[in-house]
Image 1: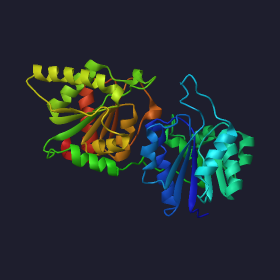
Image 2: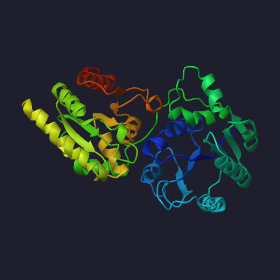
Image 3: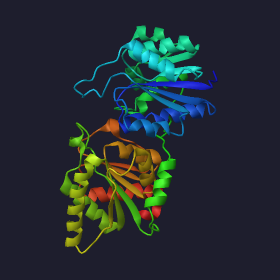
Image 4: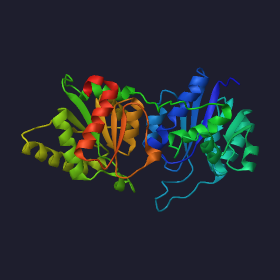
Amino acid sequence: MNPANILLIKSHSMGIGDVLRSSAAWAALKQRWPDARLHLLFLSRHPGYPTEQLIREHHLLTSAHFVAVTTDAPDAPASQRLPRMAVYQAIDVVLHSTPIDLIIDFEPAGMRTTLLTWRLARQKKAVSVGIAQFPMRKLFYSHGSPSVEHYCQQQSSMAPMDYTEKDFVALAALGIERNGIPINLRVSDAGQAWQQKHLTDDHDMMRVTLNIGCGTNGALPKRPAMQPLVDSMVALYRRFPFRLHLSGADFEKAVNVEFQSEFAKSLAAQGMFCEVHDWSGQCSLSQLTGLLGASDLVISSDSGPYHMAVALGIPTVCWFNFETPASYHRQMGVQMVINPSADAFTAAAVQALALFDPQAG
């Protein structure tokens, strides 16, 4: 098999990290078939979500199509599921001129993507791959991978499976393994333009970006408590003076303002001052690649910019309020801390930096 065009079918949350984690599987496919063109088909329950534009620009994808399966976000009062045939018609429109040799259904359960894969494989005369989560499901694919449970048993060291690894369950049917491939992202053209316009200093001091984040519905429990975060950032500043950049959505402006005030007061009490720039609500996700990509260190809660920074290859410390193994990125320059003391936080930051620059330690 040497496919020229591969269709990747996904359907889950439109969170930045949820979608970006699939980039490790895209990279693995490009390693196997360097000349293949990858086309993402995402069945979205969040029409028009900001993540769409970031993923459309992804360097590993030839195209990315986001087809709504609901009339609005699931938590909207009037949201309704669209009829299956309406979804199929929308998919036929976006894929009309796209030749497909291989279709991969990455979803482990349910019949919606299974039936869609079967239909498209017949329509495009393509080979199909999916997860044989239950025996009858395998009949709808040309090749079926083991169930998720069987895959985990084969990967005995994996406990529990992280979100990035989940896409490799489907790829097992093709004999493709992860082998440590990280998630991938590059600074976009918009990100480079943002850097040139806004980062005018001569970089004579370390640039640190802090994303407190977690302002979306249901995410607040993942946000670091203010005083421990301030204490940790002050301790880090004592170790490495830096210019601080704050990221965040427009609805996260208030928490950034609160942090900036408390951080300044704590520094002043010790006779110190830090230059701080708050970019909350001023960067698109594409522009945010510029801010994160120009940082020497990114500190974030378990939210989208954390995954973006990791994918960009920037030394990153992620602050967790509780153990969340499925969200960890176990790779060079990434440190996970759980409600750390100021000293433990600083040690994690030093470790993240030292993996890139041994002199930083």
